[in-house]
Length: 94
Image 1 (cartoon, rainbow, N blue to C red):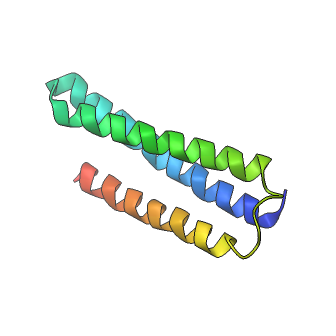
Image 2: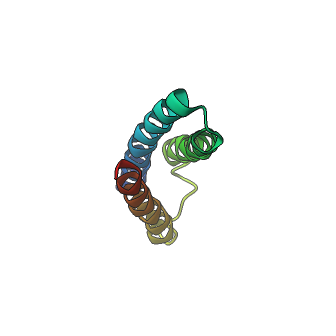
């Protein structure tokens, strides 16, 4: 595996970890309250989780297609998502 694909995959796995925690938190909220908001948040986090699963698999299986020129942009998107998810998790836990 090329180092660029490895870095992108690690960022996707970190995103999936945070999304998994958020899914569990929103699941507990929905179980206690049966409110619609946590249910909607579960749907959003599951879709983001699926996005990262597909992206992570693409980095492994199609690394020969990705050029080194696009790597910084893809990494920037992944890191921006990771930063947003960390902030979202912090807000959710407060």
